[in-house]
Image (cartoon, rainbow, N blue to C red; front, side, top):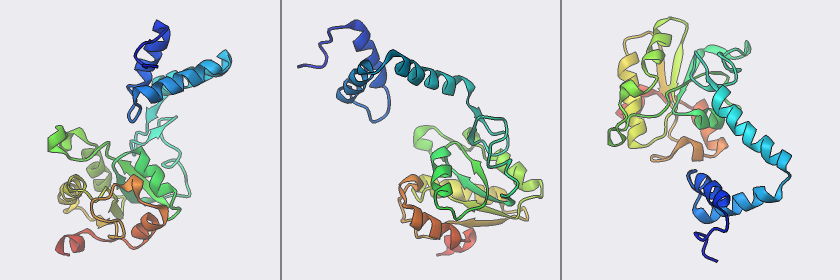
Length: 208
């Protein structure tokens, strides 16, 4: 059967929407839509409403810019976390990766991306100035730069280092247990955890 010959306009519209998702081709989209058609209407309504509620009600933490249900996320509001230690990451997936290591008890700062001139992303498009303000407030002892070890990640690390260099904040980076060229979300938890624990001074990483 040729999947472009749909017996229903409604089916075709649903497949077209699913196919817009990253990594989902039209065959996979059709399979997902047909699966939903087999479910109870109530279950499909719950599924659809959860997506609508997610998009309309999700917030970004006013402190770290992580995704949150409230103005201040659960990590930033947790009194057992160390507020003087900040881990700088690219996105929410990296927060989850670091949290899964159980080796970090500080707070986060989510940049919302990394500097990538090829993609038209510059420093002003990221949450870098808000990180500088957090550092200048005087409550932070150390900033860990935990970005992917790609060219774009290293460029972003160096830019942040220059912005924070004149503060009294210690600036460190992941130990090179994370291989050069690796994206953080694809690094296994044990390796990432060790890289956090064995982090090095950022200036030493430049010299090496």
